[in-house]
Length: 189
Figure 1 (cartoon, rainbow, N blue to C red):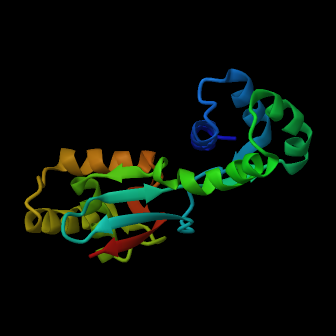
Figure 2 (figure 1 turned 90 degrees about the vertical axis):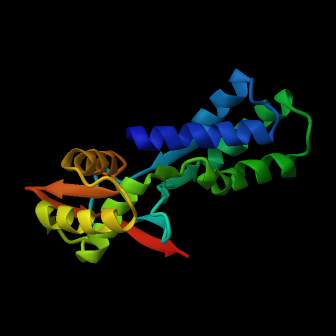
């Protein structure tokens, strides 16, 4: 499991622990560690498996990377007696909480996209950069046009910092001086 997968796993464990009122219980968290696994892509690739939501007016938004959250059902069945020793609710409540918590964690794992980062993403969209690599200087030109429209800073350092953050977030990729979006983008109005 990679770093992103481990962060998502910890957020799922925290979510379940809170819902079960066992946030401080180390033994319960250890049981969940054993039950839950997260599968994420090994590396960024332009298949648009994640999603960015941008506000059309402000260019701010979120990037969601849930990954595949897996529960080992056999281990869950084996661990139920241990879980019941820690808490007293009925079995259906335990299973329902563990099964539904991964879906509830999406709000916790969203990455905030700033206006400048949103401007880079919108620039790539205008350059048809979804899954296709575009020369960085062309993206910078579009970035400057949009930055002026939205009253943002157009300097090269601002553009490069935004690109570096988006690469770190795995929203975009760079190869040989060319940039590509690797997440699907949805504009909200």
